Length: 346
Image (cartoon, rainbow, N blue to C red; front, side, top):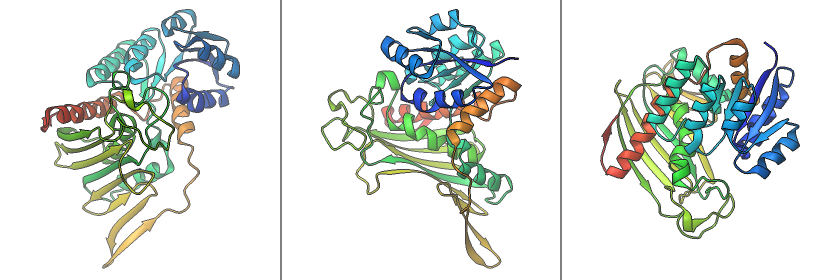
């Protein structure tokens, strides 16, 4: 085939700082044909800035007018499923920003549409492509940790409420830090654990800080219309007996500005992911293994680059529809549990 003809749905920060640069860097193989955004001036400006031939205010018009091969969906979460399914039905391979959708039902419909159309549907869980995660995945697969029976996930910000976009709008996003940043570290943990099947979820969410004025380290936020949780805490039990504890926040009274990490606990060793360290007992003593010479972190480029490669070659993507559905079921379970005030079966 010739160049991969790409369109981008949603021209916000993630499209401009992550997706577009990678597509344009692969200009010998990729041609960005069009962008779509309901903000006409924003769509026009992005198209002009990056030399993109066409811009639209309706992604359906873009899909009808342009013979595209692939699409990046970079919209608020509410529009992930309808945009992705429209692109799949238009004959496009699709890369969706995290989270997969608002609900597991939507994620399931997206996957079913991809199967019916015979197209690639994958998700930009770029932390899987980081050198830290790739390194520890090799250790896990070599049996260095043995059976991983527990994990701890942290995606915490002290005062990191985004002062832009729709991140504090529950209708558009589905939730706050759990579905926005917690989902990244949750995917890392599940990926390293082999994506076990979840059984029971128990969670609590809080809105204690975001709905009043305060100091913002990511710009001022609209506290009067803050409709998401500012912190969430949850526990999972998996069908294989493993356990996972998750903590996430946009605003929490902690020492650090930000904590994004995963700890794994196995019967032959444990590990911390960022930076990667392995903790074991060897030859009658306790040892800590460090990895000081990892390659540079280009996870954004490698994640989107792999999508390009999969479209061009037919190779299966690393982030699968089946895993995305499990992840979305867990997010659903946490929010359902928090609302009900009790544990829920998944």
